[in-house]
Image (cartoon, rainbow over all chains, first blue to last red):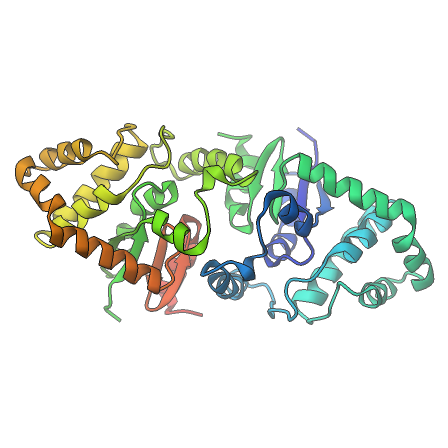
Length: 200
Length: 200
């Protein structure tokens, strides 16, 4: 089986960030590739009536605690950002624009976006922040800005999000291995065994 | 630290069942006791506006798949019950009644209730089912019925559920170790490290 693993995530999701730090190495141990698919949980919430974690009674307060604790448990640098969550529309557009030109560099930008938000507290919902990260990766910010804002990029992003929603991607991370969906950064152990055994 | 670990769960929760099969052995490795606290998610949902998993768009269908897969991953016998979920009021009353007389036997009844529902498909919301399990553990069913139905048992159960809700117990399993809450059967690895290190 050589189909890539689909890694759906929202750039504003701590659990998506945790998975982003582990998924490629995990897949590589089984000679598998990973397709990174930025998603927009705001669109999911509108479709399903769900809500961002911090706004949910009891669960919201717990989740904030769990995010910090889980990062420490996994040994992943984390500082809970404020504001949280933020819109991931511009980061998603930047990713899909860049992916069409250089998929490897798009993944590098995705890592930079996650770390900018969850380690350095930069507001990645702002175009200026995203452009500055593009510059850091050696891109021309004028070209990047044009690419992020062009109609084709916006439509590609909308299409990707709609396709993910149609596949049932309701959360972040949501990882699909040979048709089997795994939701949550706490399913990496199940994903590993699935890759090792081809299911059970 | 010798305070017991609080293990909150709903008898109708698959993830509560998974935790119930592992929590005592885990605690014993660190010379810790576990207080089992049956909870009623229906009461939580009324208070918080949340809903049972199967009724949630997208997440519900995923969860049914995840429950079966997770049971197999953990090596725990599981047959998804129908109807699902059911009310856990009578099982919770039976537990709290019996706990007041024999805490060890109450835990044995809890195991029997979980397995009756999630392995044998018995409808544990029915008094007859619960009484039959009591009989299987050597109890007099007439006495058990009187105990489950008495006013004191109903009030004790209501008080326990209210106290749990006041502590913020919104899900199942919800396990509290020295004041630190862990939600979900997928937090057993974090609980283990917490017990080993006293936090991080």
